[in-house]
Image (cartoon, rainbow, N blue to C red; front, side, top):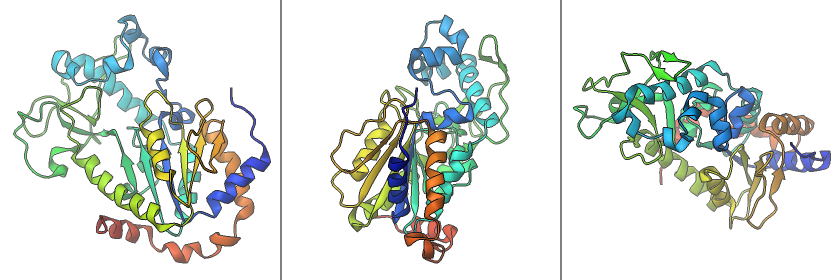
Length: 323
């Protein structure tokens, strides 16, 4: 159960966001819970979402691995095909829109760092050039056996959108019906372009390009000395990739403030004037937005439209400004 957060604390956090020159949004699976998505928190959460897999005694790391694409492709695509359908059917909740509006108002820009593979930041209106998807995106495909694939070329050739893909999954067994998704180059089996456990077949080119842009932005941010905020939402401790990145960004800087939103794992172990918000993502963002509205037209927000310019122009500049 979420703990109460005082209006005084929320107002203080809102002032931090409002006074920030730049914003980094870091997000884990907990952000999607308010969109109706499972967060697979522990074996119980995963098995509740996939009862047939529970009967097999398999955990999320047991199932989310490339070995099933070689050993039992119908089982592999049953799991990932169901996830793809689940993420497509869900809509990004209102919290994404709140974050996007805050981000657009930062004169020195923003970036998203997420371990989520659902593509919801892109669907919510965030520019692709401003998103770092650490584990890839289920809405893109690659060959399941890239070492033997005949495909060659740049990232746009080797990794392609799954826009037209429909995978028929038996809800009782979570096995996919044939024909299974095929590689558009060699005709062999295709797989999602997401990083799985014990995954040596993942093509990281698309994510590496995102990471290059993100690292350039983060490096400038840390060196600038200007105030910036890192808003982390729904990043748990079981796979702490996002939490570590949030802490790395602000640790040792003069201007970085971490705002950690999580109903359970909300502790911030690093020194500094950081903020713990023991609430769910949408609840916290909605509460903070009420306080942000009271700050509209004051301080940094007055000239931000002129300062930020055209976001698409910023994105083009960012692509060319890699350190």
